[in-house]
Length: 246
Image (cartoon, rainbow, N blue to C red; front, side, top):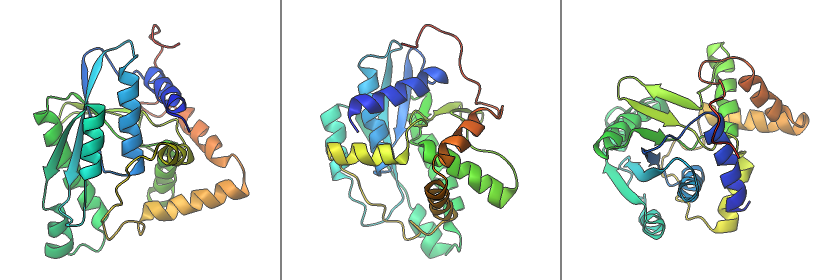
């Protein structure tokens, strides 16, 4: 997938849900994985022509795994002329050595978000861009149905009362396959996750389930995504302010 196609998806999501306003300073959460680096490329490209002027600042929360190498991400940020902050933490030691959590993902996510939000505020950003794509939206809905008994997923735009930060998800119209295609075509310097729990989570189980459902019932993922858009969940109302769509 070419960058121009990625920008088309991102521009549509940003316009449909009014994600970016004039003067925004947006922190891009960078894990080093394929999704977050694609988001960085996309917002850097969008910044060049979007009518609302905005700035971006890349932020990585280093969980403290000793085998995490971010040198290629640093090089990419220098190449794109994007300011980059790495937040050093001891989250990995606390979770895997001190507490020895049986289900580490929930606590890790809370601690990581806390460190990320603090770094975002210190950088003077008012928004945070998360790299959730269409598969993530549908998987989260399925997880909610299976494990919580409710129809729910995250919204395209979420205001966090406690921090005053607005979270946006510009990749929400992209399939994970689109992201993989972009990464391969452009040799994006993806960093493998050093987390020992990576690939052994409830989300991974649901990801494989969705893949099987979509293989056996072609188009089911798209229909699920359409159901989410049409279900009148809070935050899923499309913006009708006009003046920005092409």
